[in-house]
Image (cartoon, rainbow, N blue to C red):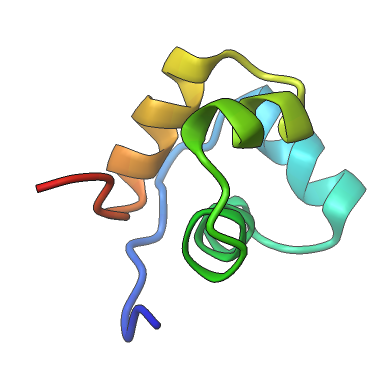
Length: 68
């Protein structure tokens, strides 16, 4: 588990919409889906109804490591 997640400043409208629908911060949603549920970036994109490239950007913004 990640001890300290980075909080994404200046969240986009899409991030805010996902937070409202899911009832949790986007950082926590991304961490849960990617780390806890072990979903791929493509699966997360499909789950959140956003593009794969957006998932990559958001994971980076949240300091969630996607590869070595």
